[in-house]
Image 1 (cartoon, helix red, strand yellow):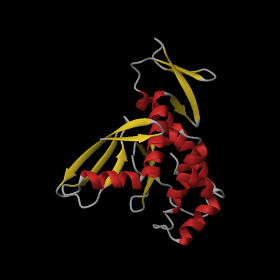
Image 2 (spheres, rainbow, N blue to C red):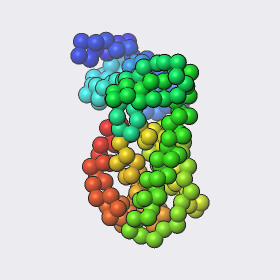
Image 3 (cartoon, rainbow, N blue to C red):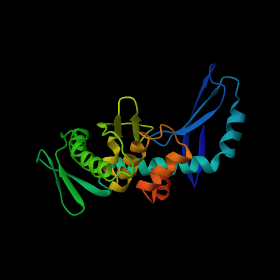
Length: 212
């Protein structure tokens, strides 16, 4: 099955499962439209569902194209660089280019930078935080669904490694968000009030992050 969007035919893969009650639509890395549904859902019903969700599918495809584009380039602290491969086994920056070996472990390099940069931003925000809170242990790892996590019992803040690719205003917001959970372990009105005390433009930043 195919779906035409702006003159381009996109493949539609359908998986029918006995255990699936609802129908889910997502777009994969290769821009294939993936439909998971119940075994009793007919192809005709799926076509109608695709037509009904046409605009949402268009948005998913555009978002995936942006992600694919980002993966082809090198993003660091909010700036995009064209990759130039060289024999130099490290990462070196020009104005709009980054020079690196094809064999370098980019995630390992990102994590090394993040350990220093994330710690510096955590220290600065902690020292200027509007409430008295315990200093949390910092962890860094790649996460697919969250930018940050706060373990209030262990007093640990975990930050998504992907933040190293973004402008530091997003890192600062996530740090403020997680530190605020040490006072309010919820998303109550008081919690958001505390976030705003320490990050005045958090609403705009939060809105921008939904587009990532």
